[in-house]
Amino acid sequence: MALEDRTARLTVLIDPRKKAFFERLCAEEDSTSSQVVRRLIRRYIEERMGKPWTPESDIEPGRPKRSSVPPAGRT
Image (cartoon, rainbow, N blue to C red; front, top):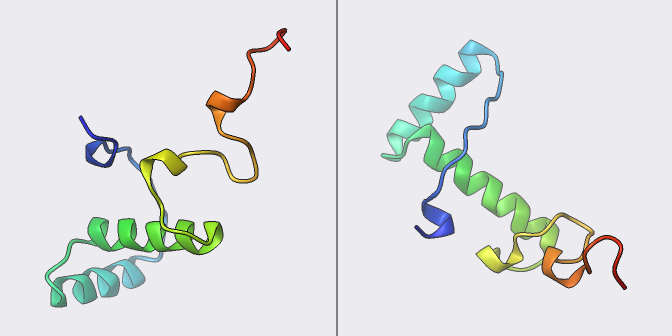
């Protein structure tokens, strides 16, 4: 399964009126609220990284890629 096909749950608490309005706007563009939130998150990540996000970019902000760090206790 490709990384982009996996999902994880993100719970966000917002004002019910704002949620209803957001869902109406999403429906107007024939999108689900989940699709729009995923787009917003991806855009935020890309703005912060300064480049397009790819599965290979899956690193903690400000840290080296996990594979480049030697295991603990080894140099």
